[in-house]
Image (tube, rainbow, N blue to C red):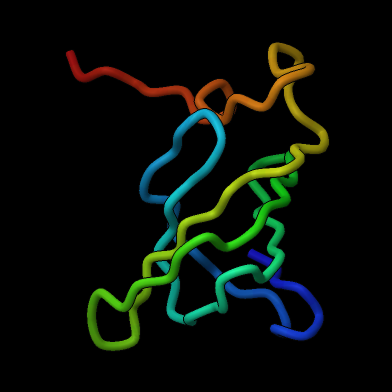
Length: 93
């Protein structure tokens, strides 16, 4: 994930949950509510705003990101944002 310039730099996150218009990620860094971020996933870039940040353990934070724009989205994801199309769920057999 890349945070805005004032937040500083890029760092690795783990995507925990995805909805049509947002995602929850685990991070080793806390970010301020309102910070702008860009998450890279495959060839797509997901731009959004931090809506919540919660400490969940020593050096671990869960961040809620409201998505504003997806660039380089795959073919089925034109028009309205729906992250569930970008992160398909695979069902266990």
